[in-house]
Image 1 (cartoon, rainbow, N blue to C red):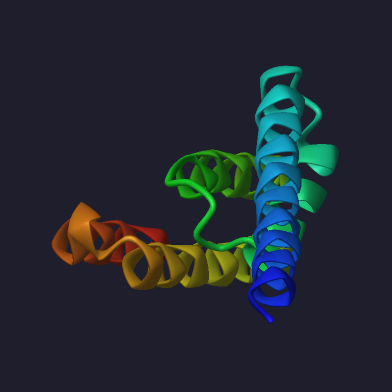
Image 2 (cartoon, rainbow, N blue to C red):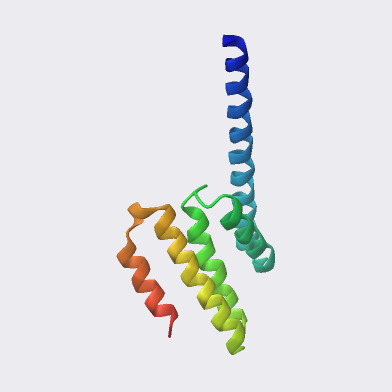
Length: 117
């Protein structure tokens, strides 16, 4: 019985460790895509990470903010796209505050207010 329990624990732990490693790899790929100015690819990684690994690292939200700001700038005045990306950016700020409360909600609230203009 003890052997079965140990085996079950080892399998469970290896599954979570593998999932965490995949999330870190996606985070790295997102950062690399952003630095290479491949915003579309970085945006896809951002969406996957927000859905699957929202607590992987604070860098997810730092890069996410930059990616979404770049998407807003690249919208070239298309009001619908700007509004959609601004709403997504505000949602990103909310997710950041929920997953990393030690960062401070006041600063994020200020950023949210600025995106409304």
